Amino acid sequence: MRFVSGLVAACLFAAPALAQCGGDFNAFVRGLKAEAAQQGFDAATVDAFFNGVQQDPKVLKADRAQGVFQKPFIEFSRRLISQDRIRRGQAMAQKYDAVFDRIEAEYGVSRGVLLAFWAFETDYGAFQGDFNTRNALVTLAHDCRRPELFRPQIFAAIELFRNGDFDPNRTTGAWAGEIGMVQMLPRDILENGVDGDGDGHVRLKTSAPDALMSGGKMLSHLGWQPGQPWLQEVTVPAQMDWSLSGPGKPRPISDWQAMGVQARSGSLANLPASLILPQGRKGPAFLAYPNFDVYFEWNQSFVYVLTAAYFGTRLEGAQVYAAGNPDPGLTGAQMKQLQAKLQARGHDVGKIDGILGAGTRAAVQAEQARLGLPADAWPTVDLLNRL
Image (cartoon, rainbow, N blue to C red; front, side):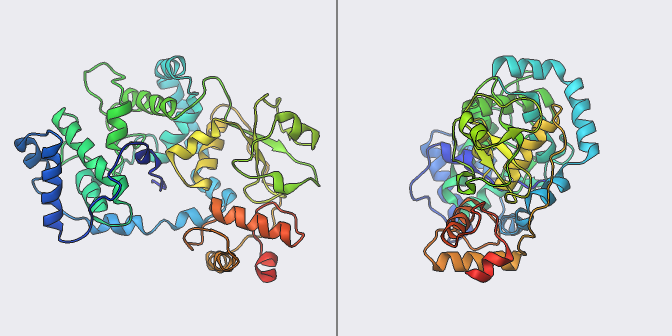
């Protein structure tokens, strides 16, 4: 059961500024073949890779239907985190203890972080997706929504095929082209794939050591700082300047302490941190340290990232967060109304999709401050009515 929408990693690599897309599908494939030849792939490899390629309408349907991200953090996290997932995560941590020791020694990535990704991406490898990966990548490259993300992945897949690590007709994965237990795109596999079990191949679908080591290397490549925390639950005072909260607003830990922010357990790390209030000042509260930003290089969804980061701490012994009593939020339809009103006031909320993303949160916070409301970025019916 996969809820990932991000493809940020693909943006890290060079791609044509104006990738070709659309038009006749067969003509599009011929263009891909010609470009593959220009990149140095021999004709036999190219023909074998594209033999039988088809457009997959189910991929486009999946790309346009990601309503789960409309759910607020408490509901979303409770949906993804179960006692069974915690229990199996702990069992996997024991089973692959030596692998996680290697990852922590070589890449500095804590085991809880990778266990959480492994759980959410594929339920510890049980559900890796049944979309033909080649067809998914070609379909999404042909579609004109984000061709610059997907077109380079096709040529990376050809290289994996040439190396013997990809079968165009049998390799399956997620609808967006990710492969294996921790769901990595072909270019990421080329850049960060690790032969963790020593068999001479990088097989992310069948080898947990390969998948976990590759995931650890990728996080390190994206900027993970060894030995540093990523997220910590905190308590907040009844009154403070709520406009200081939100992702991407780091402050010295001493500032937060001076305002009355305290660790719910343990002590705060002496690192810059942002105060995260996913459902406003009355709901759960977290401090996000610099490593938290790396999560957004793996996935763009705020609610997914926060849930994955929190689950990583739970798998390493953190207590269940205090849900508090947040004000009731908006329905999907109401959120779209709010986004339209915010857009009309000149705010950049991105697509009007009913999802409380970064742009919408920033706009909500700005309007709350303008109206003299607590600027905690949590939209309510009262705010919607005032606008």
